[in-house]
Length: 581
Image (tube, rainbow, N blue to C red; front, side, top):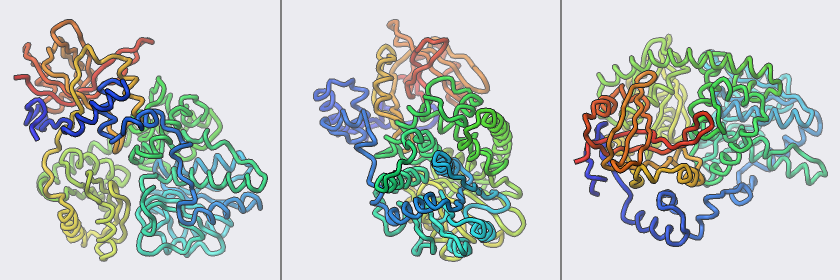
């Protein structure tokens, strides 16, 4: 395929790739059939939306997209056992993972039970002392004091700990990849069990919990009882879906879209306090959930008190929420500092080892287990390779991995764990965790590299820049951006469209903040467009645009609405550029 606008190597060294001939034809057919703007039709064409499906796609509803919860194995008995516990006032414990998905999943159940006048015990393991997932001492202790334990965002591989929960029933609500056998729980509801179809494999744990509560409410209605309003809880599902980088396709798209609308009503004290401390001054978008709110909720589990995020999301006390949000904000700043130090050391080590293999990995003494996943993501982004980062302490190392599209890291890690090369390991396609002995580290990473190579990870080149079409500065209106947003929300597996602005003049370029660049460009005929390029001065893009010298450029980025003093304007979030011939 010919490079888009002839750009084989941009300022960031990437080849620009435009729409295929088939996508062009599909987009044109959509324009003619729907009268929608071409920029919007290009998004629909890329998603494979037919003309007759366009209206439904642009207005997704849960009524149309929410699956019957009973399509998931063990859902009926899980919901029935939960209803029984509520009706008989049994003691219920919730064992949750320490990330956003686990915290939001726990908060969903706590909120539901509170509205029914039922208390619940929240237990979230300490990342450093206990590690991920249920452990035998904790489960045995909870079982001694409770009738029902609900494990959320964990438990699918926890055979020993669940067996240790003697005297209590255990329900697992999870989405992590299942093994060949399931633990001896009362029910294991997981769309990624090996005996599931995988049709709902894109759900995060909070999505699975929401489906169970839908079935719980249905069973209660059949018994003449009324459960809480589940639609009002979709703010938590949206936060978890985006923060856990679940694909924004199918029902996930409707869950997030409706959840953002719920969040905009500012009814949940924890999310209100979190938004305020994060400086979210507009109606929330998926971006805010993934990059502003999610990291702060995660900060408690990463370097602070493990249950702080879940407590914030489940509290109904505004004063308590404000205090916890402030604490999480402080922890997030500390997390950034720790992450920066580990990232620098990990990148230097990975470069020394080589960045052209099927796996990029690094391991260091005392690297904080709360930031290794974030650093793995940074290595993955920088190299377009699956990446694993491990913190060593004593005879063991605890690590986290992130993958690239088309490479199933979770399955590979689960395989080497089954082969005995890891103490334990698991996850899903794009993210996974592991524990390994110091002595077995090199052998484990070598074997992991072999498995990833078989999937083609060693053949990956520099990541192309995918461009969805051409737009002129004068056409980038507020109305167009709002129409494009109707095809959202945008995120994992559903990226926001990226447009090329060809042959533009740089009228102004000035540094702002720490290494960012503010740009004003135009078509030379009067139309102008402002742009922001975050981190521009950390690479070649910023200096090139800052020293434009009157030259013309092709620019690429995503258009968005900028709200300043009540006035809406369009700006381009610049990602790349190349000199115009």
